[in-house]
Length: 267
Image 1 (cartoon, rainbow, N blue to C red):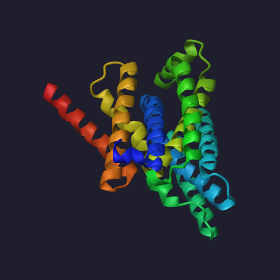
Image 2: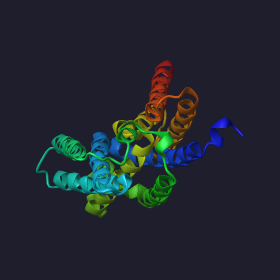
Image 3: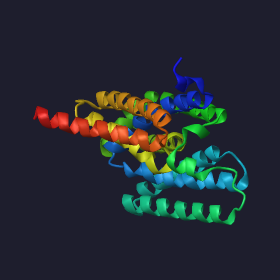
């Protein structure tokens, strides 16, 4: 057995990482189609408020991250739907506001029971058995819901007016997508960190779109690329003793650069 799998924390990291590697681009592909890629970055920063609340009030930071991220996702969608504010303005409002609140909460607490840096940048060594169970249960739920609603959510993300004309429940499907995005972002921060979640959700999708000819193939290929990035990143992180989140995203970026070179040579 390779040395890396003789450590329980690495086995937990791989289990959580594989789940995240599947669901992150699966939801990210809809955000890219909808031209809402920055939503992932916004929700990741919002989730930090939940982590801070968990640290201050002594409950599981992951639970706090999920709750706050889901509520924010629903709030963002409601403001967007009512057209009271431009999409970019809504994202900026939630991102800056939640980050400010998180800083205040952390500032007033003098006895933190959580390493906040592990949530900012990701840390394979701090993924607990409870984290793995939570990621697995909610990850499977996200995967099942997305497969069930795949075609309908795609139509809504691609063209809401077309979806309405086809009789689809656009508002309910938008709500479902926002819920799935909020949960996915929160689960991903344990592996890649708050600052890099958006990259894992978007970069594999952009890479796959360089050579895939259909939405379904782009989705499948982006998941495959994400799995490669996460697994290779965890191996590199362990053997080179470097941060897991940054390593995973750097590998994803290298694959994107390779796809651009390959596409350019074909043209």
